[in-house]
Structure formats: C-alpha cells, structure tokens
Length: 299
Image (cartoon, rainbow, N blue to C red):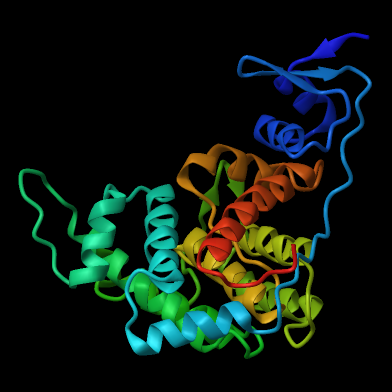
C-alpha cells in the first residue's frame, strides 16, 4: 500500500490540508498514522462523510447564556469571549492593526491607554462599534433576517468613522459607487436593493436553516457586496445571527484561516468543500468553548 501526505490528500479530496489532518486526528481515516508530526494516509483513502451539517444545539441554550451574560455584565464567560474573538478576528481580516489584547482592553475598560505605538482611530472606533453590532445580533437573533437589520448592522459598524464623513459613502445604506472583491466584479449599485430582496426571498428568513444554507447565504451576500465597505464583517455577523436563529453551533473565522476562507468564497461554485470545511473547523473550535463553559451542544 502506498501512502500520501495530508497536502496531497487535500488536493485529491478538494479540502484544506487542515481538514485532512483533523479527519486523521479524529480517527476518521482508516489506515492513517503519524510519523513524528507527519500524517501518512493510504492513497486509496476515501474522504469521510461530513458529520451532521446542522450541528444542532439544545434549543436556545447558547443564545440564552449569551443574552444572560450580556444583560448581567458578566466578564470571563462565553459572551465576553465571543465579543473579543469575533471582533478581533473579523476586523483584523479587513486590515485592523489592533492586537487581540488591545481589542480585549477596549472591550473590558471602554478606554484606549496604549503606549509606545501609533493606533488608527478608525480601528478603535470600529472595534467599539463591532461590540455593539454583536449585541444587536444577539437581541435580534430570533427575528427574521431583514434589510432593515442588515442596514442597521452596517450603520452601527461604520458610525463615526472617517468613511462616514465622505459625501459618497452611505453609512447604513447601499453603495453608491461600484466596487470589487478579490478582483471579482460585484452587483452594480443600482441593482443591489433588488438582489438583496431576491436573496432574502430565496433564503426565507422565517424558516430554519442548515449550516450549509447559512454559508451559501453568506457567499451570495458577499458577491452582491451591497455596501461601500464593511461587507465581510456585516456578512459574518449575519452568519452568527442565522446560526443562533436556527440552533446551529456558530463559529468565528480566525484570521489564521483567512486564506482558506477567501479561497472558499471564490471557488464556491466549483467546490463547496473548501469553505464548508473551513467553517466546520471553526465550528469545532467554538464547540470547545461551549464545552469549557458547560453549554450543551448536539455533538
């Protein structure tokens, strides 16, 4: 029998190398074994069937805890962790230079107080605004997704930034100028309202959804790219909301997963596994948080 490396198997299966290593570590690839830190995988190994894509949690258990901790001002719980992890990673993916510790400091103290380095004012404002966006998501998690809420998330995120002072930048409203994402054209400004409306009709915000349906909503939203800036962050906030609405374990795309995430977005039509596996890996990480804080989940 011949053996291949995790990277070679990843290319064959159409998933990330990280996903292959996770499969092996979980014992889901018969015959795979470690030599030092290197996985040796049978060349005829089959890609494991994806575990329950819905990954249901007990009804409202996570959302109830998040809201309880938010309203009680609990520090050090899962609400605290979600705020810092999602705000740091989502903003950092879009160019923020704040560190995780600086993001935590802003959340915990509502002050800046950094010494010996230059900090962009917009990075601080958008971090503080993003905390409010997460609160907005939690308070509206069980309401159907709407254009009003999508625009409210954008308004909250960009309020008070330098962008908000530009005459052509529509804070809390759809873009006025064409834009691109990853060298791909997006919906023209005049077509955004119609395409967002059609997207919501196809998605049916009043129904429960699987993880894959939520990811597909995200892909379509990002390809419309309805706002002048902030589309990725608003899109990831929408995914958080929809996971909580459908009792699906949510996830935070870490900045270290950015390359896999962007590849998955760009190649969704050809291979959905890239983005799905990235989100599943992030979801597994979120489950470890839930286990630590003793919040039940379906797996």
